[in-house]
Length: 109
Length: 116
Image 1 (spheres, rainbow over the protein chains, first blue to last red):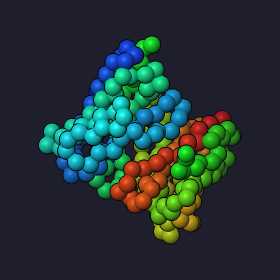
Image 2 (cartoon, rainbow over the protein chains, first blue to last red):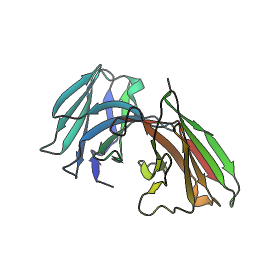
Image 3 (tube, rainbow over the protein chains, first blue to last red):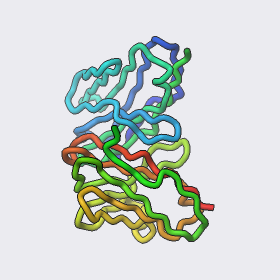
Image 4 (spheres, rainbow over the protein chains, first blue to last red):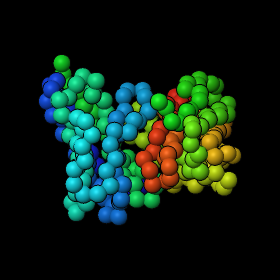
């Protein structure tokens, strides 16, 4: 599988702050990029998908993609305690997903 | 609501037992489904791609004879862990893309398998 690297955690942020998650990938031909949220003991839940360079916003979440730098990020604005989870970056170019190791985020009340 | 259903959610059995896990796509057809395994504190690793009407495609290092995959209909894929041993204990998760393989994958709730 392709290499997908995420910034090491855990990441602790106060409630209401911005959590910033980063991901780099090794395969230049990758076309599809996803962020999944996984609560402890649960399966991943899709948060964002992004396919072209630039920003994509959905509520409190913003994904950024830079294919030239092989970099994708996720910003979580106004972080809530319910955002505490592990966030997985996933990359695909031929329908198979390669996952990063995940970044665990803890939002302090 | 859930778009992919996985059953059972939890299995505890003795070493040497074979265990079948079902993955169903709800209200959509999935010609392709995926099976992952996740060990504690690790990320998801793709085990195999399940193809309706044809043989599954296994990732390197995954034993075909141990992890049998059957995709007999457009809404159902099964994973059978044959002669399971303690080292097979893990969290098994299936996924299916809704609307085509290029679409985001939706995951089942996972099956936690514990082999004694």
